[in-house]
Length: 90
Image (tube, one colour):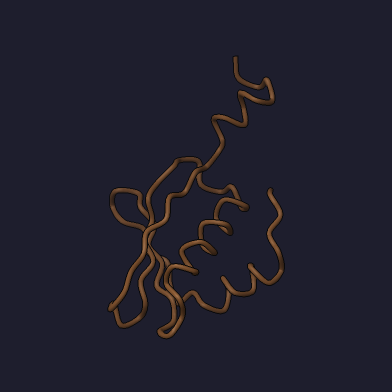
């Protein structure tokens, strides 16, 4: 698992209200009102990519509780490329 700072993880933990999976396999996050949507899109992407628990790439979204703003992020699992780089897949 890639390392992220304790501050980044704490920011993620404190700002997230809920996560929602769509029927298409896309993940959306709702964050507390008053937080910076663009900043949280980056934080969420960093945390998810460090955990490496999702094996497919997807486009996710972040919105605030009042649904007045949103941002997108591109999650890259890295699984396939990591396997090639390590010689695990031929």
